[in-house]
Length: 444
Image 1: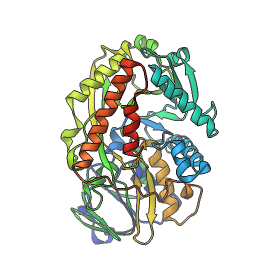
Image 2: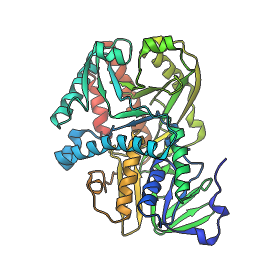
Image 3: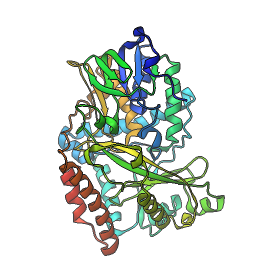
Image 4: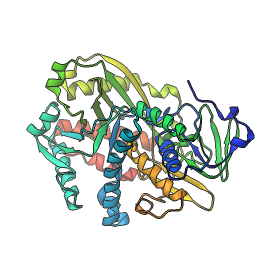
């Protein structure tokens, strides 16, 4: 059942120290760390639906150190040391999420098995080698990322046509909905007010306007990720891009003995059009990927969560990638929007002149990044200068996305180009220049 809305509160509850818009991971982690740091703070979280309704409750369940901006690009923009600190902070955050889950008894089906990325063609193998070489150039050793031969890769996951792969231990598989709902309950226990079924109409300095009246606060945190496009003034801040998933029925032991993932490693491969998967705690194969179109005007509706053609493509891709699971019955399918900034940079910040703070633009890598954002926002709100507040993503301002129809044309052309590039590489066995061109045009 949803928690009460703001409509149920009296005038006294409508003025707080910190108001947080959005009860996903970003908003909840921010409330969690703020309340622990200063129990006297009056904190309220408002959510249009229920806690975890968005990407936080529907994602692929990777709590990973992945960051959507490469080390090389971060180094060009902020310097080598800053780039390394950002990546190390992400690695530390994976461990921090696990620590909180254990310390607070949160439900999450946590399994710190790392990630295996398959290389299934010569172009993919080349990208695997380049990834590890770049990591070594920045001081990341085999304990952080390791190049695997075909045999070592297949022992982790017996995919088809495996030529090699990459393994990193900096990832845990989780059940995202369990974690976000458990975290919401913990935040309420700490004394944070959480108002669900409270749609926000606008955010202004000192005031959150909602369908049930205004909430006033000295500081306001916008934690709306892909749904930011619904707010006045933020339509072009991020592009809501849909990612969809399928889940099999629990697979028998003999299938898992053939497939692997004995440590519940998360998995993907080096294709351009992103795919991702994991073995759930109840032995299902969870598999997802991009491929759904971007919708004109950054529109978000429940009908876009389900695209039969994409579900069929995911089923076919899963069978090609893992033939042992090709006939596994599908029990669930779902989807939802994530947020991508124009330059693919996630960011976190606080403008003291307006009292408005924000975090987001995780580009699908947000499960761990939201925790780092929550801890960083806590330091910013409390006026503390720490290692977190000097990371390169703090205060970053991404350019706005283009006006329509350019946004729609560019986003969907890029999606099609990535798919074409993958098919061309499979057919001709050489890297696609098309993917490089598209990545540059999108600012990746």
